[in-house]
Image 1 (tube, rainbow, N blue to C red):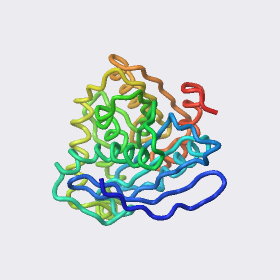
Image 2 (image 1 turned 180 degrees about the vertical axis):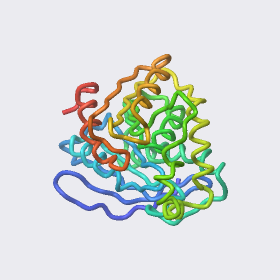
Image 3 (image 1 turned 90 degrees about the horizontal axis):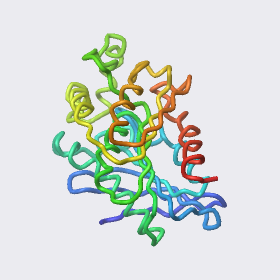
Image 4 (image 1 turned 60 degrees about the vertical axis):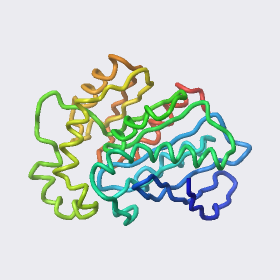
Length: 265
């Protein structure tokens, strides 16, 4: 694996390492948070990515909060998302087939830096990133805790919020924030289809969706929890305020769940 590593920013709590993650057809920017040695919980690792048309700084608080608790964290930009980088790819199938591999590339980068393999892996994402993290779980054979933020399933075939007249007022600009291969008409249909095909089994999953998240809807997270509980251990958190466009507010909920569930402090 080719690594493109900048010099870390040294401080007393966390070192930040900017670097590039690569697959056969993808190339993205990422940041890895390495806690100070005296705070490092080397048996944990965390990897997260963001939602559609966004970028990794939208989940910067996730990396900051967990790394200050001693957990090494990588956050990365999804390919074809121009707020995070201008690297494109060949076609949509390259994105769907290889984007989940970026979680594995991030874990290998962490392993290269820390010289140890983790015992427990924390992975997840926001919205589209949440779906990709679900796809990535099959790549790892260690104990995992998934965090799916701003992600749910509608029971009926209703119009997606991104396809409503309200959202389409800004869609002309938003669609130009991503590659032509990630056109909303392509991505939204794929997401809808993939939600119906979810077959994740034997995982620990935490769903976090705000009651004010108009994209997920009032019952979207509940519906997904019900679907996942058939074969997984599922915990649902529904704070009053966690709007879809404010994923950074999920950091406290992620940390609190880990603190109680995985005994970190």
